[in-house]
Length: 124
Image (cartoon, rainbow, N blue to C red; front, side):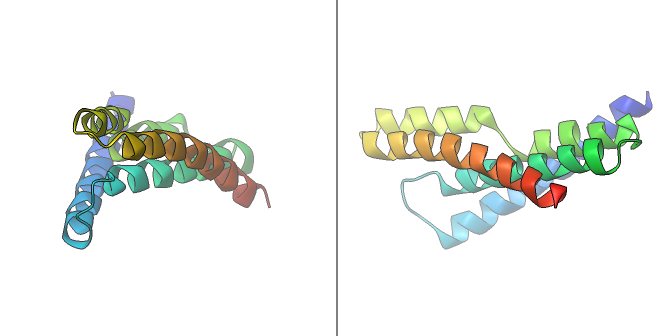
C-alpha cells in the first residue's frame, strides 16, 4: 500500500508543478508553439536522467519507494506525452505544419539530450 501512496503523492506534486508552469507560460508567451509542454517534457527528461542515475548509481540502496515517488509519481505527473501528441496534432490541423515538425523533432532530440545530460552530471 505504501508504494501506491508514494506514486499517488508524487503524481499530485508533479501535476501541480506542471500546472504552475502552464500558468506561468500562459502569462509570458502567446505564440503557436506549445512552449509550456515542450519545456515541461525536456525538463522532465533531464530530471529523469538525474533521478534515475542518482537512485541507481549513487544511492543503490535507496528504497524502491523513493523511485516510485520521484520517477513514476512526480515525473509521471509532471510530464505528459498525451498533451504533446495533441498539441502537435492541433498545430497540423490548424495549418502550422512547421510548428508541429519543430515541436516533434525538438522534443525528441532535446528530450534525449536532457536525459543524457542528467546522467552525465550525476556520474561526475
